[in-house]
Image 1 (cartoon, rainbow, N blue to C red):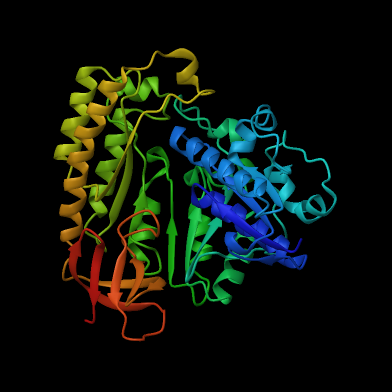
Image 2: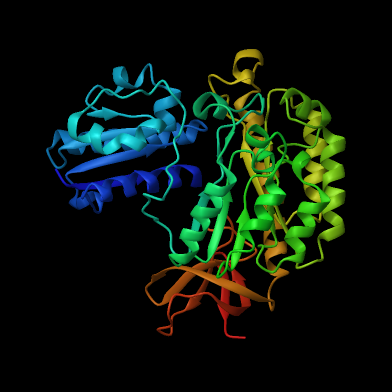
Length: 434
């Protein structure tokens, strides 16, 4: 069995895990192909919230059915779902041929050949000295700088799934970034569960600023972007690095989750309402430098969210003009989280109604913010070509997450270039020549 296909579900961190796995398989002379042409399927799963669990289980059932019909010979399952439900997965899906953990990726080729017993009790991910990695993206690449999380957010199960926060050594990150850039990936996106805490476990202090400065010195790197920085970890020096360096994407993903002091406290968020507002005030000083684009996430319907808390959130979302990209999640009562074990959920009707109200507000605000960019010159990072269009993203939006961009194809090469935003539609930004 040499033809395999990897199905990657969930976030960019899972994408990176899948790419390392693909690199290992290619090194062992396996052929990676589409699911329709594969002998075996490997599913890298997600289990962050209920919809992700549902998608994972439906995907497993789909390929188990194909295996039953002998359209595939082999099904392996790994990733977050395995670590979260490792005690029940074999009972629920006994037909799966192989279940493997994060740490097993380093020895996956041996496991696949011999069906060696896997250790899916561990959540330690091992990093190689080089990059046995098959990048699934084009022109940009994710670079994971740490694994796990030490935050105590009561709504989240990530620490239970991926373990404690552990940084990748700085020299290894620089080495990997240099290899990626020299291989043609001109945009590097740093990912971590707690980007702002990078280095605290290895070096005894936060080292994100040092890391950014070293990465920005890499020749031929055009854009450096980072995800997931906690409001309390964002300081003036980081903002200066972002706004004073043309290589840095003028983009910050700062999840605040809520604005009510009561809800933030019950969520067990590091920091409080005062510190969130202080961070936003600091960002406000730099918002006009390079048109700094702030993205945030909001959770609606948390168990502690009283009517007055929701009203406070409503007014904040409606009146804030600093945040340019809003994402709102309805609260899911995740088994294994502190909130699940200690708080009684709100009625579903209340959660859905509040979610609808906030979604409508932020959708309108996202549209207004996008239209502010019409006529502005941007850097276009192409990702793929379909029909007569080239699709991608600009420095103001992250791929697969924010607003997509596209240009009518005139047989140009898929490369970085400066273009002008001509219009904004329900399909994204329409770009054209300057």
